[in-house]
Structure formats: C-alpha cells, structure tokens
Image (cartoon, rainbow, N blue to C red; front, side, top):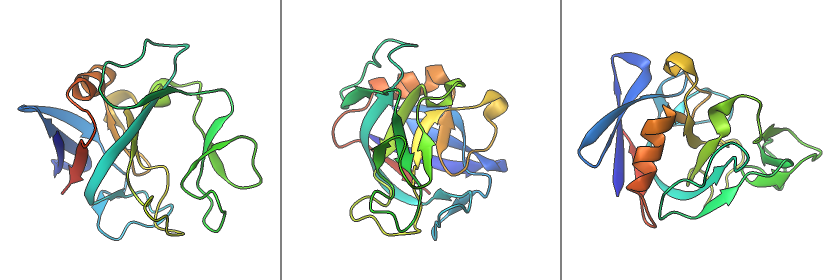
Length: 169
C-alpha cells in the first residue's frame, strides 16, 4: 500500500490519500521540506517505509494491521540528540542524552507508526522521531510528524502491511 500525502490549504495541513479515500492530517509547523534538519519543525519530503507500530496497550486494543506491532513500555523513549550513538533510535529511559518519552499523558503517542526516515543509515542532524501518530485537537501542527485523527489512523493501518510506505510530496 502506497500512502500519499499532499499539502493543502494551509502550510501545516495535508491530505493523506489511501485506499481511494482522503484523510485530513497535520504536518510540521514549518510545512514540508526536502532538506529536513533536526529541530526545524518540518515534515520531510520523500518516500518512507512504514517500519512498525508502537501502541499503548494499557489504553487500547492492539491495532488491526498486518504491520509489526509492539506495546510501548513505561521506559520507552526515542533519542533525538545528534552525536549520540543511539540518535534516531528507540531507547530505554533514562539515557544521558536528549530523548522523547513515548509513553505520554496525552493521547498523541497512543499509536505511533515508525517511519523509515533517516534510519538506513542514520545521519546526525538530519531529523529524528519522524512518525505518523494521533493528532492533537483541531489538527494542530506537529514538530515534523504526520498526525491524523485516531479513527482515521486506525482505518489506514487496516490497509497496511509489509512493504507499505508513505510518500510525502
């Protein structure tokens, strides 16, 4: 399944096209950029494989998808510190570097789709923690991720399996 994201109306909104349907989504506060850098607030342009799903098993059932699915543990994080050996990788907290906590009080990371951005190989400073996840209210802009309403994200995941990718134009 090829998911296609196109920017529309506002610089921080997009439409994700999948299975003959279109889903509104939030993108990075700086729009879409081909030259993505750590901390720039942009959603990277390109094609990114959907690597796996992480989800909050304490808040919801396992998403219905053919992709690999793993629960988020209480110590799970994602290293966003350029120069650290674990940059742009899932880590166990605490670590002696900057890292995002994946288990949050708000629901935005209740479902995380890990995208194949800057991971083969990882290049320092080219962006980390680029995911598809649940949107904030009113589809508020992200720090570079693609965010969808929960039910829309679940519908998209039902269509996905190994080899699925997101194309950001």
